[in-house]
Length: 141
Image (cartoon, rainbow, N blue to C red; front, side, top):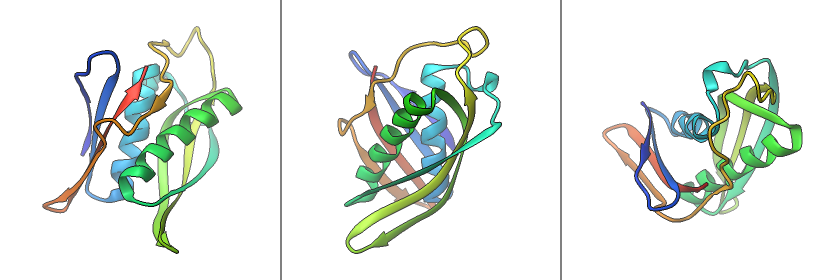
């Protein structure tokens, strides 16, 4: 369980693993925000509801990460903790419901690193093996 960063020419790859699909998505949120900020400095004091859908699990991962980036900009918050409450297949689409926990952006305290522009379909993979779920994609930075 956890996440790791992958080498890429101009962008950054992430690979996230969890014992459940929801946990792998949660690790994806942590990896995304760790690229941008020291998430240990971000207090999970406010919750934001996140919902998204896509035709498959890998595409849902990209939608999830991009929705987190959208909410970061809309709410002007950094997030450090994530809780996926459900991932369900309904009407030929996968739907995710979750909460992201964080606080308003404080540039002095949060140790800003780089800006993530979006999750992409490049390098997109999903694998379930030995009871572990692994997702990966490239983040445009």
